[in-house]
Image 1: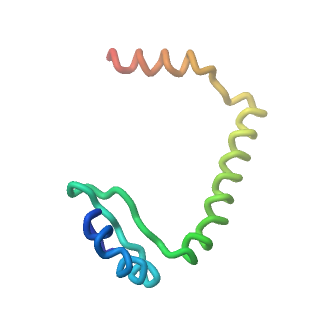
Image 2: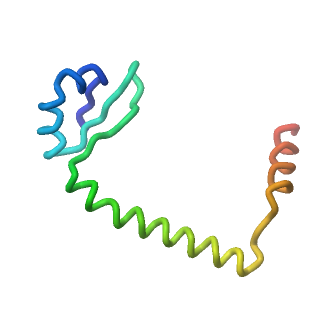
Length: 86
């Protein structure tokens, strides 16, 4: 995947729009990746997949709740604090 700096993306925005029609383009700031720009078609194709993943996660969470596989927040945080102490 091609990567541009944030400054390059800003100064070459028209070119960037053409590039993302062919493939995603990464954008970095201070040498660190901060974004990936994709075409509107790619986004439209990905959105139903993201929603399906969300539905599946919600379904699993509700099944866990029905099965009693839950913990209250206080006990989760207490075990995390205890684990940090060890």
